[in-house]
Image 1 (cartoon, rainbow, N blue to C red):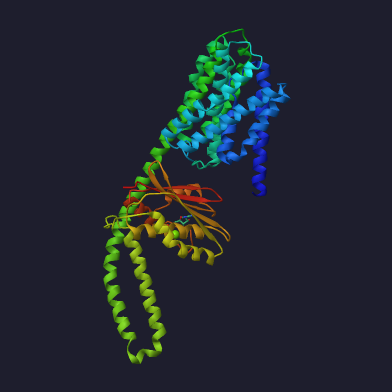
Image 2 (cartoon, protein in one colour):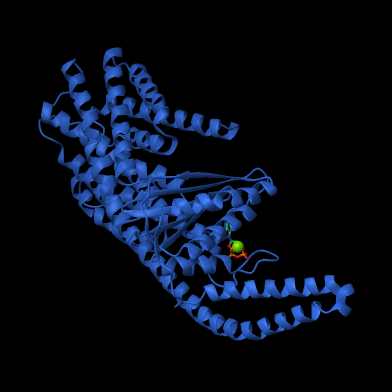
Length: 510
Ligand code: ADP
Ligand code: MG
């Protein structure tokens, strides 16, 4: 663990403690809190840092309840319940979704169902135990159960996406104008929320809350021009304003669930979920368009390259043959070295042509049932030697994957291209991780390097023939890999930040 990572963990710990403490403090004052943000943060922490960080959640919760005057046994019970909720949420999300929490409609829905709706049941059960042990609560048991559970649901649905989208990459290209626009949007939303939740519109707070739909246009704006990170950030802001201005409305003598509280809670969860889903759809669309554009360019260049390359190859072969003949004549003995150089250069030209030919779309594939793991194992010594030569190393982690129909030569080429780029992007002592695993019935092959990353605005250009940022680059490696992937019906995904780049190739095994 590095020094910087330690800092991050302390930051998470302090934030979690503060959120939990404020939550407990708040709930002693208003008798029921409509959103329990600590639940969302706890899940976020475990998903980002891993299961072994459970003590952060448990101890921070226990201390914050004790400090707020709750008896020790009840604080322990609540802490235990909240921790187990986070653990079960983490387990379900890891199992059902994987690492891309919100990238498809399905994943957003699964996240809401498993982490948001189901896992808080655990905490609610512990809360009922604490109620039996004498926590003061003026309303009926069912009211207590429902409010406890729904506060956790709202906390998870609103806060975990905020944390997770801030940690993961987002695909917005920020510039001065974009930032200014977002700040303006935030101010407008804050103002509108203030009007709505403070009863400035309509003649009383209850009526005013019906004007919540005024927030919708802002959300459309966010969905179309911004990413899920901004959606989550904005919703958190609206939630803070909402809680701030409605908490005293909650203190009324009642035996049923307060409809006003329920209505704002429900609204916040609903708009967050809907916006995340729509944003996933917009993103998927956008990516599809980018891919189509890429393939069109690729096909055109590929076809041209194929016909050129083919025509060039014949004269070159003839030239090579004659030169070889010449070089074998006794009177040319002294010139041997010159001839070797000429022949080597001709061979190099030939191999470049071969690479161009690989771009061609309609090449015949030599499909055989093979396991990608085997191909990696065979290539590994070669790649490792290459890496060690420049003081870097390669780690492989091969999961259990089935054989499927593939062209071994092409897959080799694809692997070598990715490895070459990764090694070139990393400084000394960089490590490249190559792994394979199954996900959603797809075979996934991942290259994760510790290189300098790819700037966001260049990502759409990847795979375009001749696109290169290197002085001596050809800009063909990725273009070839993308066309190989397309011929194998595989999809390539890229994620990159300033410290690492991940290329993953998902194959549909047939
Ligand atoms: P070349 O390697 O000849 O430049 P490629 O098609 O292989 O051509 O790659 C195109 C560009 O994509 C590279 O110039 C580089 O800027 C970028 N790139 C590809 N892979 C990586 C990586 N792992 N890390 C950083 N940049 C990368
Ligand atoms: Mg390359």
